[in-house]
Length: 297
Image 1 (cartoon, helix red, strand yellow):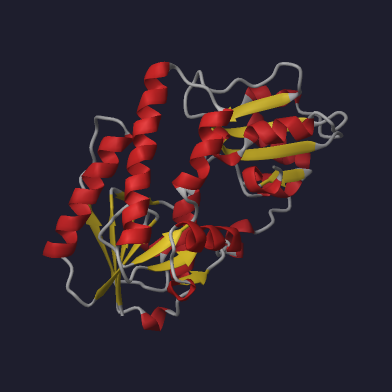
Image 2 (spheres, rainbow, N blue to C red):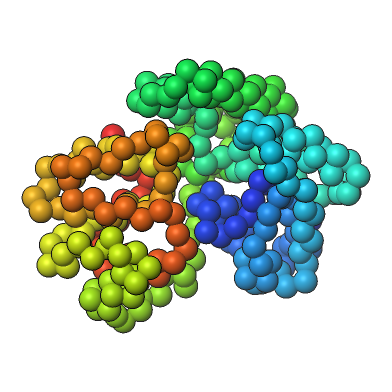
């Protein structure tokens, strides 16, 4: 079979990209005659899909270097529609991630914007101009989800969790037989344990991140990685207050520089989003927080 993936970016360091990559990698390679990737950006194809070798074509959508995400989203809608008409044959199975493209037949659903909207606006405060923009953005999210998930017929869904599967079938009236539960895959080869001590790992990182010198290795260290708001850093902070002598290492960034303040009364070390951290640091932490929005709330 021939498959075309539609996504804004296909980069293994980005969480939703990685989930989609591992989903494709779990399909037996001899079942895929050719893979097309329609995207603004793609990592090294040979590293991302090593079993497919020369059966990959990257159809690059020219990037927009201006405007907010809403413009980028609408632009990709239009560009992906033209690509399906002009560059892909009718026998290609078109697979999208969420509502990145409305021209697909199969959708990998990792979360639903409508489900997240109430929590987002009730939990976080914005200046009026940003609030209005976010409301407009979520309105277009709703239009896209309503069309692709409810109105467009015969769309098939690969859904990340049973919770989301129940939400999709209930709120969008999707027949259960049009969905399949498909947990995120993981490539354990990317988490090979590197036999280094905590001291060695920390000393290697301090040269780039001197703020990490305050971490005490004889006390528990908790690691949070990701977008502050969407991954639920506020919930982690609430929970960490009850842990004596806890140290929280935060890697990531908020949506806005003024949108999230780390409390001064807790022992928090902040490192902006980076690819520099080696896998070994995860093994050295006392606890790693995944998507805490669902695990702690």
